[in-house]
Length: 137
Image (cartoon, rainbow, N blue to C red; front, side):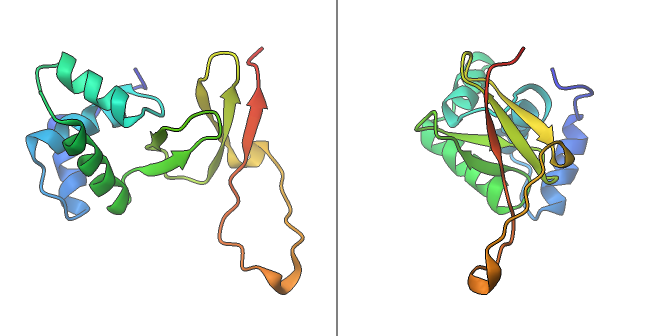
């Protein structure tokens, strides 16, 4: 578990503030992604909802995750080690560490990695996201 889990009311409030109706499906997916999961795939979300008595189609899971991304509550990450998209609830600027032995992805604070792009005026850089690969000691 990721620390204090949000209540159903807190999750519903977050959804409403993001202009999303707090349906049973959205609240359930949010409960897993925000409270329990760490960079889950849509398939992991589906497996969790099935195990918790909420039988959602994989299409509904993808649509729900897509709505949460569009609303700014989640971020989609495409990792080079997998064809699957993973979802990140940490919306603060940060980087990632990929443990190549386990496949586990961990957040790294933005100041843990120093990057200074020297691209001249050729590019307008909006964001820099770093993936550090290796094995956790």
